[in-house]
Every structure is written in structure tokens, then in C-alpha cells.
Amino acid sequence: MSRIALVGSGKVAWQLGKRLTIKGFAVSQVLSRTAAHARALAKTLHASWSDQWADILPDTDWILIAIRDDVIGTVAAALSEHAPAALATHTSGATPGTVLAPFFDRYGVFYPLQTFSRERKPDWADIPVCVDASNEKDLAFLRMAAEKIGKQAYSINDSQRAQLHVAAVFANNFSNHCFAIAEKILREKGLSFELLHPLMQETIAKALKQSPFDIQTGPAVRGDEATMRRHLQLLGQHADWQQVYQLLSDSIKKEHGASDT
Ligand SMILES: NC(=O)c1ccc[n+]([C@@H]2O[C@H](COP(=O)([O-])OP(=O)(O)OC[C@H]3O[C@@H](n4cnc5c(N)ncnc54)[C@H](OP(=O)(O)O)[C@@H]3O)[C@@H](O)[C@H]2O)c1
Image (tube, rainbow, N blue to C red):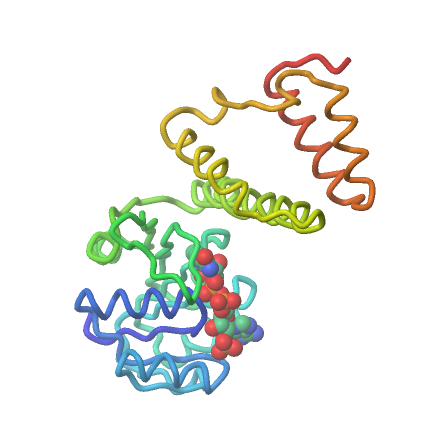
């Protein structure tokens, strides 16, 4: 795979592009909707760039699509007109690989299971990369690439990956949203979010050692109804946070078989 085209220039494209390059995979071209974004990433990777899908090099070996989930199909359709023989993969946990099937004979998924941002350098040595491909040879290639850049390659099909992604939304997006609500609650009372840092660290540390189910604490699992009512009152100015509190408490009670009285 000597010619790699990176499609997109967002968080994943930047992190993946840099890691691939460090690990010896030459990204030869960056294509992205916004010219300035494509140019900036291409400069870092010493690659050529374009904001026109039709400019994809016809002899591209691997097209790595890292763009918003709901436009992957449309962009793949445009790319396939100019580089139909390439292996096309996307990086989405939530999107089936088969979204590429109408446009490419060789398609797959290259999904690094981590939360990426621009500012933080990912610890790639710890990151599992979930791969899938429409044929064995490409799967072997993607597994090799995944193991070079990440911790381990996992061959995971579309239906498994869909479940994995839902689980990841709970583990990362929802828990982070809860951290954000906690931060706002403290700020409203002039308290520092840092007060919660040791608690957050211990929560993660424990959940990595034991089943999170087994280590659940708090008023909902204890059935402390009076405390929960007081909490709901305290959240009176925030009807949406009250709903989140109630829903999560009900879910904890249900999972742990606590009585509803
Ligand atoms: N962020 C994560 O932690 C993470 C982790 C694993 C997998 N993923 C997956 O990786 C993919 C990219 O995510 P991201 O977080 O890198 O997204 P992002 O930072 O928000 O970047 C979005 C990218 O999509 C492009 N884009 C948006 N609308 C477009 C359109 N209408 N047509 C063409 N391109 C368009 C943007 O191009 P321009 O900037 O050029 O406009 C940009 O390069 C997604 O499939 C996501 O599910 C994300």
C-alpha cells in the first residue's frame, strides 16, 4: 500500500494521519471538503492535498475516510468514480462497512476505539483498532496496519461494531456528559470541579479492576428515597438534569432489583 489517501481533516484524520506516518505508512494525499483544512493537514504529513474528490489519485491503494458519519456514502460515491480499484475504509464505529459496498469492490472499516481530540496526544500503544474487510487479503492488511499503529487488531463485523459503539457511547460520551453536569452544578455554587477529581479517578480505577455493576454505590442502589427526593429538589432549576437523575436512578434500581418504595 504505497499510496494512501486520507479523506477528511478532523480530529481522527489528524491523529490517524500523524500516527500512520510515524509508523512508516506514507499518506500521499489529503482530501477534505474545506481547502484550508486539507492544506494544513497535508503540510504536516508532507502530502499533496485537494478539496475536490475528483482529484484523488487514480492509482491510490488505500482510501481512509474519516469524515462525518452521515456523509461517508456520498463522498465514497464521488471518490469511487476516480479510484474504483482502491481499498476504501471508513473510521466510523456507528456506520456499517457495507455503506461503501455500492461503490467499491474492496471495502472495510478501520475504527480506532478511542476518543480523539486535537489537543491531546493519543496513547496509541493502548488503543484497540477494530477492523473488517470485504475480502481476506484486505482484512490481513488492515490487521497488520492496526497492529502497527495501535495496541491490537480486532476483527469485528458490522453488527458487533454497532453494539460496541453503543457501549462506547455509554462508557465515554454519557459519562463525560455526567462529568460536565457535575462541573456546572459545582460552578453554580462557586465550588471547584477539582474537588471531584479524586472521586472521578477512583471511579475509573475501580471500574477497570472490577465489574462496574458490582461496585455501584449511591442513594439509588441503597434505596435512599429521601435523599433522592432532596437531590431532585436541588435540581429544581434544571428540569433536564432532573430527568437525567431520575432516569439513571431508575435504571440503577432496576438493574440491582432495589424496591421502588
Ligand atoms: N472523534 C472521535 O473520538 C472518533 C473516534 C473514532 C472514530 N470516529 C469517527 O471518525 C470519523 C470522523 O470523526 P472526527 O471526530 O474526526 O470528526 P470531526 O473532527 O468533526 O471532523 C469532521 C470531518 O468531516 C468532514 N465533513 C463534515 N461534513 C462534511 C460534508 N458534508 N462533506 C464532506 N466532508 C464533511 C469535515 O471536513 P472539513 O473539515 O474539510 O470541512 C471534517 O474533516 C467519524 O466517522 C467518527 O464517527 C471519531
